[in-house]
Amino acid sequence: METFVFKTKRQMGRAAAAAAAQEIKKAIAGKRRANIILATGTSQFETLKSLTRCRTIDWSRVTVFHLDEYIGLDEDHPASFRRYLKERFLEKVGTLKAVHFINADAADPLAECERLGKIIAAHPIDAALVGIGENGHLAFNDPPADFQTQKPFIIVQLDQRCRRQQVTEGWFNKLEDVPKQAVSMSIRQLIKSACIIVSAPDQRKARAVRDALDAKVTNMCPASILQTHPDCKIFLDEAAASLLSTGDRKKVDYEDTGTG
Picture 1 (cartoon, rainbow, N blue to C red):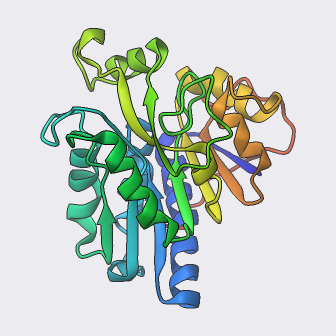
Picture 2 (cartoon, rainbow, N blue to C red; picture 1 turned 90 degrees about the horizontal axis):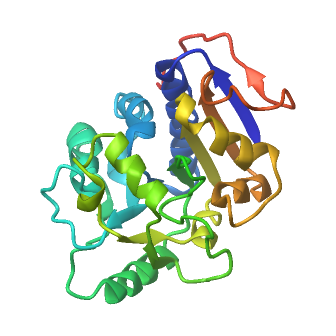
């Protein structure tokens, strides 16, 4: 695991996007295709903005998997992650090889999990772009997360701290509006990814980042599982990194290398 710290969120996002672009292009060069996972939320704003500006990726060879979605939320709702990805990613990169959304407003969410599980089993993931929740969640796997299930997609209960984060970030007006369940990619499925690229900005993430990177691996901080991954790159701004021990983290004097 490598940790990189930048002065600003914009710098962090550009660097994370550059790392993602490198992995995508490497996969296309080697296999003629790339399979990626995209997260949503405010932590991904700068990363996805920079990644969509990359002009050297052949997006028609890229298959995208959706990380998580609220159960019962209409796709047109302002907080819908499907809507988020369409507006902030798909509309900007043009034609993709395929996109596999989580249709969590389907009549049978469990059947939806099974449908997606069969698809992702045939698409080994080259790069997963994710964030870390204020409660240490990874995807919507809130503590205590299930580290054992082999199912690729699962139905999860959202804890109150996670639901409050959605209000704080402006996706919902009040706590009562936030759904209590979601379909989420499981921990074991996520860490099967060849490369994991984490973007986690803001002071409010500092405690979760510290617990994920500096403390023991535990399902009470689901993101701590990232310590076990052989190719995980963590991109932080100074605020999010403020509680970390010095360790091996690299404080970057930013150079604008772009994403290609």
